[in-house]
Length: 126
Image (cartoon, rainbow, N blue to C red; front, side, top):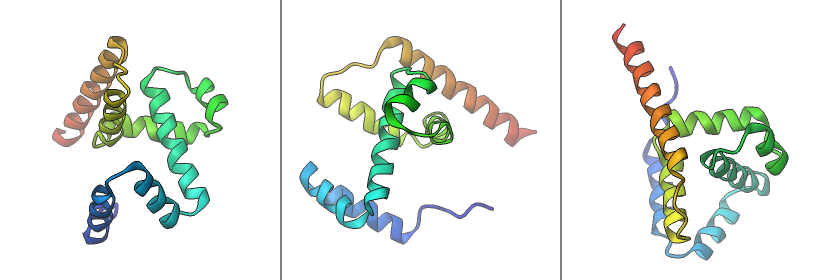
């Protein structure tokens, strides 16, 4: 059975990040808490999520980010089956920068989420 991610320590970390009041303070915190490699990996995954959200093809994402197809697939799986963390962050950034999501991508994401929910329901019920 998979280990539960949420616990007292992860809640504490999330609370600490949420308490930081500026991008500079968040950047300073991440630079302190992460290795350079971890920080770059987090940044790369978020860029992969942004590109997937825009409808960019895997080959182009590999070329633009250097991410492996395994990383891209994992991020895609989180976008479809995850807890909408990427989606919330991407939406907030788009609002901040006044960039609407294309209606085509919004429909595609809704379709993929509905399909994922159907699959999950089938697995749970039989």
